[in-house]
Length: 489
Image (cartoon, rainbow, N blue to C red; front, side, top):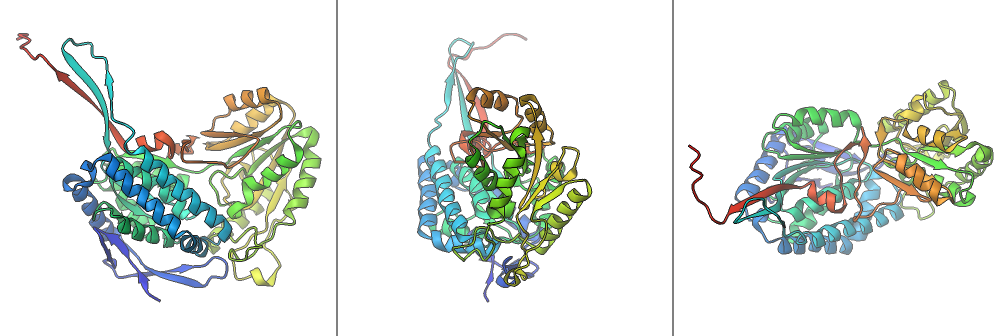
């Protein structure tokens, strides 16, 4: 099995330590790839290449239209290699290949969106209070960007960072999750094929403590963009203070899905499942907190449990599979402990609550789709991000109580409201402290709309016009058209 390498300054190279990491298929624990294991020395080399490319290279000075064409070419290549990328993503993560195919379409769309955005901002002339002068606002690339991506949506999350950074004229060093690097390696091959100059994009494949730590603390990095857990995000904020880096942090959520009695019942049940069980619940925006109006609570739970029992677990490459495994044994242990603690706190297991009995699933990191009822906001299972196929159910009597419960969290990434009363929906949305709130839908995102959270769900936004601005600095240019002495002194 060939050892896949890191990409630094336009070359595929082994790590300084020459150490190797095995990449495991979560479905059966088979080794699917071997990759070089980068360390801090490799990160420093990659940062130096990106720094030189930004300070002395042509990419930041390349006309925005030309940068857009390169980013557009990357999208073309992703579409060309869609099936290969989808298979790699499913090998890496265990998710169904059908989900991964959909991800690849979304990823190509992200690159296309930012390719089109690249040359749409020519600056802004503003009124100057000074006679015989001009005043202009322009946006310039922020510089060298450190980008750290998670294991749950490896290439999708990478695209949200790569595409705007390149469109804006930055250089970058990316560190994908060490356990799911395969599609990131492939897309760097595609960026090389698309003509991205040497040093502009660099890929290092080590752990968060070593490589991620170097990216966060190195003074030659101007911006750090991180998607992942809240505790790691706090450490990155502290390390980034070394040179007061720009920060873009998406730190997850514990997302409420509020269902009123006047909602379309079947749709709300179906969407309650869609909110959680794609990719085995390993989604930062998963609607894991189901908050149901008391008058329909029992009927809703009965209907939900009936549907959940029918979810088909299995190999992501089997077209009949609806849900794959968790990412790793370590994460499986965490999800098991999360549910067990919920039971100790008083939650009732309505369905699931353990590992499947099917012998064919014993070598994988599978956990049954689970619904926990009798939940209250003082339970850790309601407050903490479990990141698995687990729904907690709370109930409410009034609209005010529903909003209060929805906001009772340190997180504020996303939420959903199901009701046929649009006035009620808009009243709730106005009071819900989240970066995205869906009405009669869940988990939708698209490149044109910004993504990010309130409170401890993070800082900044990805996607949309704001997602491009994260990778830009704003400069004010003032020109005196008739300079003359002030004669003040």
